[in-house]
Amino acid sequence: MIICGGGRRATLRLLLPPLAGLALLATAPGCDRQGVGQGASAPTTRRVVTTGPAGAGVARGVVSFKGTPPPGEDAGGSACHRGAPVIHVAPVEVGPGGGLRDVMVYVKDPRAVPSAAPGGPVVLDQVNCQYVPRVLGVRVGQVLRVRSSDPAMHNVHALSRLNPALNFGMSRPGETRDVSFAAPEEFTVKCDVHPWMSARVYVLDHPFFAVTGADGRFEITGLPAGECEVVFSHPFLGERTRKVTAADGAAAEVDVTFEKEK
Image 1 (cartoon, rainbow, N blue to C red):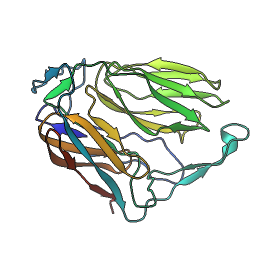
Image 2 (image 1 turned 180 degrees about the horizontal axis):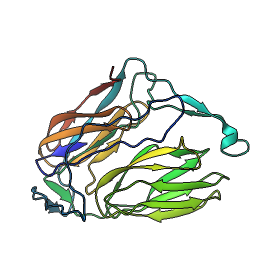
Image 3 (image 1 turned 180 degrees about the vertical axis):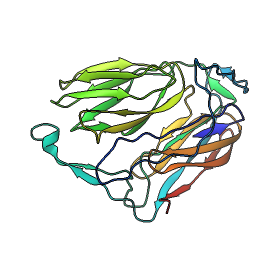
């Protein structure tokens, strides 16, 4: 996450599906957040809504992994559909240069946010009994288009708490279903039919977020000028935070290294 300015805090809980032979439960350190509809108080941060970009600041960098990544495990392709390849499930994916994939980087409580609409649908696909992408961000009110590319039965089970939980079936390739969310939160989407399938969804009420690619790189643009707290969240490795000063027309370089806790 990238946090610009002070404000409410959030409790982040990692939920990973069971997979034989792997101890994949990790609880990331987080902040406290009261649930929507559960006596939540109003945010203490006053945001300025702008008609265009909130600023011209840029935060970018590389997220790396130090050490040997924890091993994954194969799940038989026959458990998905005929002709499916063998599925390898790894809690941590590291590129050739040590870049860490699937790290969500986002801003918490920015002082200013654009008033523009969230944009087009974000797609969460099911390909050979794996969610693609494994980590994604979507804005409040933006369409999350869940799609299946598999000739297999799936159920899409979203373990949301501040938004209504979802659980629906999909059985045909090309089938889609659009959903959206009204409250910011982070949750797991899983398939109960194929227990190794898991994706992490971050619902945010601003556009200042990015997910690292295979090389571990990320970039966030349009940041308001001022000090920001950058939070990096990984489904298995937890979180790291850094403070950054965003300046109009200048890029702030932020590099972070994760390692498996002993």
